[in-house]
Image (cartoon, rainbow, N blue to C red; front, side):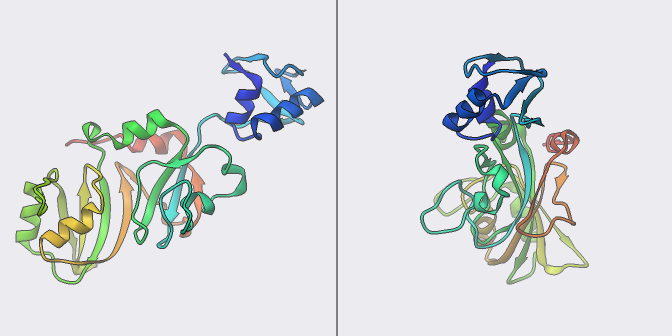
Amino acid sequence: MERLDKYLASRGTGSRREVQKLIKSGAVSIDGAVCKLTDAKVRADAAVTVNGQAVGEKYVYLMLNKPAGVVSATTDKRDRTVIDLLPAGYRRRGLFPAGRLDKDTEGLLILTNDGDFAHRMLSPKKHVGKTYVAQLDGAVTQEIRTRFAQGIVFADGTKCLPAQLETDAEKGENTGIVTIYEGKFHQVKKMFATCGRKVVHLQRISIGNLYLDSNLPIGQCKSLTFLEIEQIFIGNIH
């Protein structure tokens, strides 16, 4: 059971003060009955409406096709953030990026207000793979693939978990498709740099078995279905 004002605020209806005014005005109904008590208790399965419109789910899960030049943060004093890209209705839902992409990296980013989900997805213990397409200034060699498979060690002694590195004949030998199972700072770029290659463009294309929707324009987002969310955790064999 949850207080009505808290219930509405957590689902993006408005600030705590705004929803309290709505409740007192008689605009809110629970299971078809008007309720003017801000501290009324609401069941998780209750049908709550505001001015006849159903209130959304508590948790939100969005797929964003992140463009370059935007930071993976909720606020930033200098740069535009991924939250700034969202439709207005989502901006007061307490969303945050589940993980991050570098400012100049594009592709799949998930935004949510479900902390438990984000922790589950990002925990190295869950071994959820993140796959990137990296365009390089040189060819991907067998030696580089072997080093990735063994676990790259940075100059400061930091060792990465073993990663998969593949090539695609259609994309050319200067393009690597890399899957990592952790999220160190600038990890993919630093892994290639350790092997003498510079990343000139980087795009994340999948998290687990959830792939970036090819029909989702860059800079746009879409709500994830339950089945799409489950794809993140299916088939993690490492």
